[in-house]
Structure formats: C-alpha cells, structure tokens
Length: 128
Image (cartoon, rainbow, N blue to C red; front, side, top):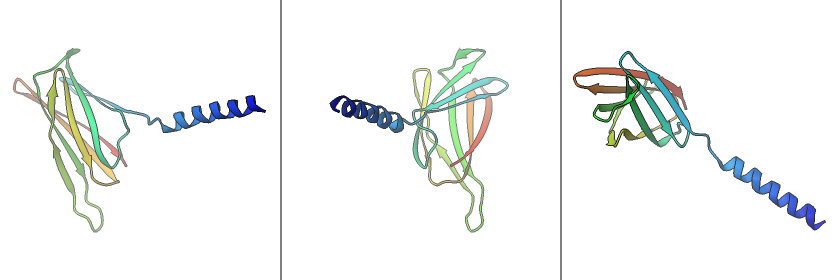
C-alpha cells in the first residue's frame, strides 16, 4: 500500500509539473533584406509580453539596426482602433521589447528594421 501511495505521489508531481509549464512563442519573419526571429518564454497574452528579437542579414546577425515595433488593433463596433509603439532596446546582437497587449482580440504587429538607410517592415498577426 505504501508503494502505491508513493507511486501516486510521484505521478501527481509529474502531472503538476507538466501542466504548469507554458509553451513559449517563436515567430520567424523573412523580408527581402532581413530575417527577424521573435521569441518569448510565454505565448502572446493580455498584458506585458517580453519579446527577444534577433535580426539577420544574409545569414549574419545584425547588431546595429534601428528596430521599432508597432501593435495595431483594428476598430470594432463601439471601440476605436488602437495603435501602440513599443520601445526596443539593444542587448548585444539581440533586441528586447516589452510588448503590452492591452486586451484580447486581433492584433497586427509590424516590425520596422532600419540599417544603413535601408528600411524594411515585416508584419504578422494573431488573436488573443
């Protein structure tokens, strides 16, 4: 009986651990000039999303670009459109931003990359 109790306790521990782990987020965007990879420890959710961004040009990491992020939610009945620019800071060859998705709905994200006078915008969207 004691072995059964220990076995159930161990199985319960594994189940609780597995259920408490959230799947991360990764999005790859490829433009004409740049490739952008966005990662986060958590999937997109309402509130602050900590995104890490890596930028590549011709397969090489880029650490000297100006990067901007805009989040846009189109208008809905009884609600105007929303548009937010999120600050991006550079940390080595990684860029970081706290993207605040203020409510559930359809979000359109635009990443602006400017390097040596060449600007490219890459877009993606998702629903919360």
